[in-house]
Image (tube, rainbow, N blue to C red; front, top):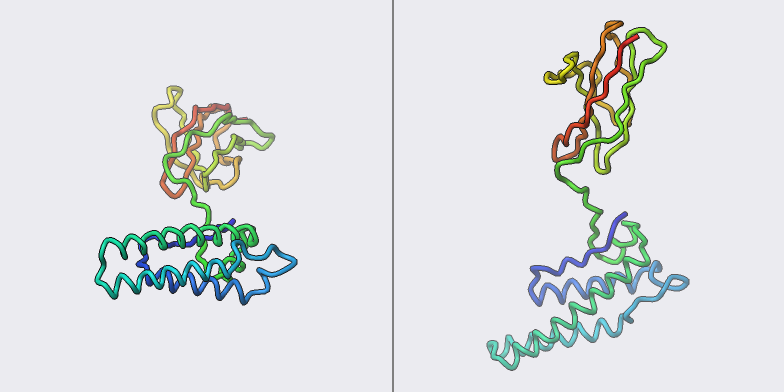
Amino acid sequence: MAKAALNFRGLSVPEKIIRSRGIVKAVGASSLFQSPNPVPHPPLSIVTNAIDALEEAQKKVDEYGGGKKWTGARNGHEKELDKIMAQVTRYVDFVANGNEEVIQAAALHFKKPSVKKGRLPAVQNLKALATDTEGTIRLVWKGVKGAASFKALMSADAKQQTWKEFKNNIATDTQMEVNGLSPGVKWWFIIIPINAAGEGDPCDPAGVRVQ
């Protein structure tokens, strides 16, 4: 679900003024921000007054080449506009309720929830189950939040020290079937979760003797 973003960071005062006026114009012109939806908060007239006040303060700074008095006044108006525009952003976010088009209608940027990246923890409750089909077993496990897929590895080593990949060993679900195994052999399996950051931790092995 998208979230409205003001993106004031790094902007100069003139850039903030231009951006704020664009947002006020867009919100005021769109029926999305009129009754029966909640009307803009704070009122656009108050936002415009804050923009005008900052613009006048900036003119004084430019006219007098800075100076503690004028710069201090300008900085105060800048903080006030930052605060008011943050309120406008929250208002748009409330009306949009995650809708990207509504956020864009207000001339605001949007950001999507970030996918947590990092090493994933191991999956839990891996089970290796025999099936009625000769040479086929079924693996099931509990998924891990943030995983995009899962990789299975197998081993015939009772000490599970040597793991190898096999055909069709990647799943996007929390289960898979493994085919073509020799009957009577006990195989061990582990599952590794995968996301954009790479592979996560392997889980505890689960074994099954193939029928």
